[in-house]
Amino acid sequence: MQEPAVEKTESAVVELKPAKVKPVKNPTAKKQRSFRPFFLSVLPPLFGIGMLILIWEIIAVKNSAFPSPWVTLQEAINIFSDPFYQKGPNDQGIGWNIYASLKRVAVGFGLAAAVGIPMGFLIGRFKFLSGMFNPIISLLKPVSPLAWLPIGLLVFKSAHPAAIWSIFICSIWPMIINTAIGVQRVPQDYMNVARVLNLSEWKIVTKILLPSVLPYMLTGVRLAIGTAWLVIVAAEMLTGGVGIGFWVWDEWNNLNVPHIIIAIVVIGLVGLILEQILVAIARAFTYEDVGT
Image (cartoon, rainbow, N blue to C red):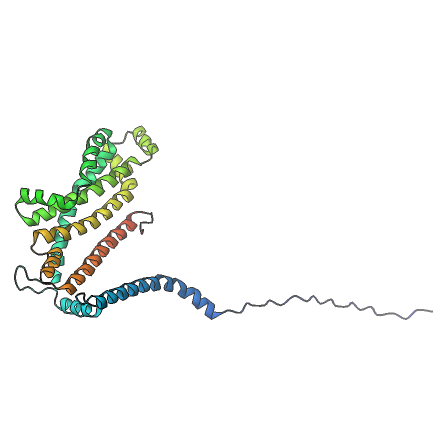
């Protein structure tokens, strides 16, 4: 007997793969992450300014002679509504006074850069010149810039060039010192390669020293411009004429305290703008972080 044929069927094996679970996006968390840097950069300065205004208001409440922030704001609106008026040689708007001070700073600072930066290269490059000028720099650098003002008045017989002289003499030291330090810190390997290649002094300065020294030089320039702006305000208080320093002193003689506070804020803002301009220039020419 033949056995009945058994039909063999292959059972299909179904492989079950785990389904991919997509993470649920939380738009709220994403917005919080995106707004966090904004809040960290904006809120602290706002809190700082608010605290300053609060302290200012408390002082104004305790001392009736001291103007409140609201009174000072109203005076600032009046002043800046016509900053370039002219009613005489000693009665001009705040815009003209700022312009006169910036012009003196530009001349004195430019002369200091034209003299100080090349001198810094020479002092840093040659040991003989370094030994000759270091005692002079160490002696004259700590002298207050205003101590040089009578010398300027004696030599130039005029207040305007005397103020420029004070800016020049106070701005030159940071540029000389920082440039010289930068030259002295150039790696000796670079100089050895230049000696092997028999490069001229001009090529050594332009191809090796200048790119290496540029961050130090710009740091000296930044320090110098801040010092120059400080000095011109004090010098103009003593010499008179047109300028933001003279404007502050004139308003003090008139017992106009709100105008003095406005001038202090303006002086700070102008100094901040000048420094930020130089920071931007430094960032454009160097790879270092010069924001601090």
